[in-house]
Image (cartoon, rainbow, N blue to C red; front, side):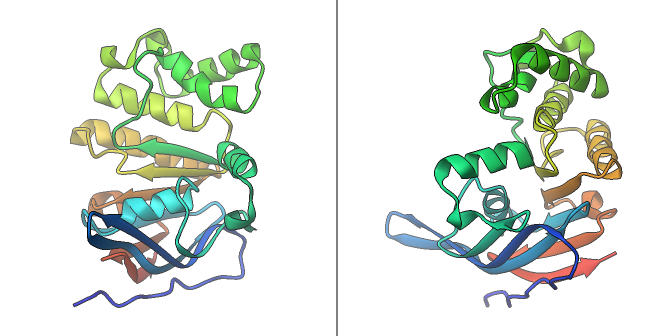
Length: 239
């Protein structure tokens, strides 16, 4: 039986991200897959928000939609109150680059670049001068305790170190929103807790943090948990 769709309660407070009645369909050969089915949710500015669901539930698709990495077939996506469907490609890329930092399970570091070059890369696309890029990247690597590894390539770093570089890269343009897709999925439990602690610290500094995961332990401290099943939001829990 298909999961019942639940609309996350909208509030009067400023929303950092909002999805309303979002649908996303993929066609693989002759098969039609409804990855999202009328999903609605709201992430408030400065909130620690978790989207939880099993593998194949649609949570990663939802993250890509929230981060404007993909567009819905139907529905509305707003980032900082702006309907992204109304933005041109260049305007959307600019908004995404300035506003959102991404952390992925697979780290997604550029293998031919060193740690500091990976952190500097997002600033290149925003036109930040080289000297400022270098200073900012060095500062961020200090914050994640990787100064001594700044000249190392990803294959010379442990999984935990790669994820810490990825977090530093996500912060390169000082975004308001951090989207983390299974950020500890490829890490052992001890390293995962350290990475999760970094994300919690970012929230305490005022960032809006959204964690997409199937791990119940990671969402225990979230202020809002939205549960997704078969592409639909089936329950929303407030702490």
